Every structure is written in structure tokens, then in C-alpha cells.
Image (cartoon, rainbow, N blue to C red; front, side, top):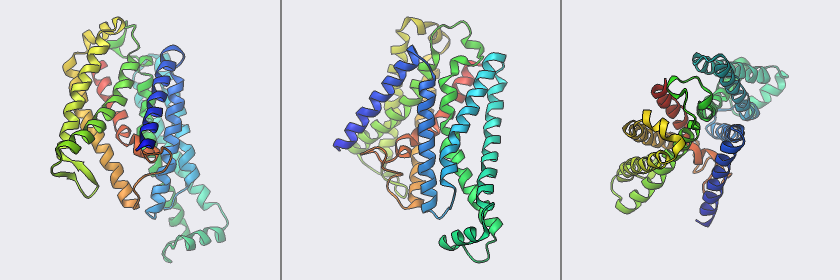
Length: 322
């Protein structure tokens, strides 16, 4: 328990420091942070797939998120310079093209080896005798590409959220406040509020299990409590930012009811992300995705609720701000 508390304090301090650096120095500190989390998360996902018998290229899976980050930053820069919001769509298409290219690289790395080496790996992995070398390498590349999508591609939507001020959004023109701080904080806060108060509410009230096959500790009362408390504390976040003079113009065009709807749906999305990660770990036969964070487990154990949150929050705010 002490390890979990110490790790939580360390996470809070790290995020606070990154927000200070974002406000007073540069947005790119958060980008580097997201890249590290995405790379290590892909590393853990590759390991989990391996435990499921889904052989893949560990190092390609681990290194690939850095290329996705570079693609995102280029797309954001071009969108800002050209004042063309469609470049966000082009950026996503570029990411998909990079994932396909990464899968091709993984296939070539597997296939362009000595045949004896490939056959030895197939023997070690107990691949059925009727599987050809080509199909073995193709499956290995496909399994590697899974890590490109989850967690890398979804999690790196955080970079677009981090630079939402640089995007040509019509409703944000002429607003001097750093809206990306508010949006990024929301993306972190919703899963944190939901996870914390779902655990507290569930432990106090108890009751019927939400999904005992995937996560025996979660209850329906905890899930509902997590949503309700998340909406309540999100309202507090909105009101606090509304008291900051530089954010008043933004709050005038962004009503609290819209923010609370985003928070309510986001709380459900966060819990879905948590359950999805539990499904993966159950399939892999492990309790935690890794040991990176003492008391918490791996990186995926800590960011599982955030992985689906990043694209959701970006879409929600873009719909509002276009």
C-alpha cells in the first residue's frame, strides 16, 4: 500500500511539473512524456501478446510510437501554418500509413533472415507443422501491428490534444487563454476522478459485480458512483477555470452543460478502457501488465482508462470548437 501511495505522489508531482513546463516553457515536454509512455506501453503490450501465444517483434513494437509522434507533430505544424483543419484528418491518415509501413518492416525483418533461423524460431514457438514460413512471418507482422494501434495510435492522440491551441479552430480565434491546458487537464482528470471514486464508492456500498469475469473487484454501485462523482468534480474544475480571468472568454462560448455531458460520457469511456485492459490481461493470464510503477503495476495498468479517453476528448472538443 505504501508503494502505491508513493507512486501516486510521484505521478501527481510529475504531472504538475509538466503542466508548469507547458505553461511557462514549451508544449513539447508533454510530447516527450507521451512518447515515453506510448513506447513503454507498446513494449508491455508486446509482452502480453507473447504470453497469449501471439508472437511479434518486440523491438519494432516498442520503437514505432516515436515515428507516430513525429508524424503527429508534422501534421500539427502543417495545419497551423496552412490554417487548414483538414490536416488533422490527413495526420490521422499519415499515422495509418505509418502503421502499414511499420507492419511491412516487421514482416521483412522476420522474413529476410536465414531460413534455418526462421525454422528454429517456429520450432521454439511450437508453430504447427503445416504453417509456411511466409504465413508465420505475416502473422508475426500482424501481431506486431496490434501494438501500433493499441496503445500507441490511440494514446498518441494526447499530442493533438496538447497542441489544440495550434489548430485552426474557428471558435477559438481571438481567445488568448491557453485552452490546451484546460482540455489536457480534462483528459487526465476524468479517468482519475472515475477510477478513484468508483473504488471508494464500491468499497463502501458493495453490491452486485459489474463484470466479474474480467474484473472481480468492480461493482455496479462503484461504476455508477464513479460517473456521478466524476461529473460533480468536473463541475468544480469548470468553475475554478471560470474564475481565472484569461479563461472567461472561453467559458462564455463553452457552457457548463456541454462540459458536464463530455465528463459524463467520458467517465463511461474511461471505465470501458479499464475493462478492455482487464480483458487483455485475463487473456494473457497475468494480474499486471508490468512492474514499472510499484504498487500500480505497469504503464498500461495506469493509463488504461486514458487510452480511449485521448481520442474521445479530442473529438468532443473539436465538434464543439469547429
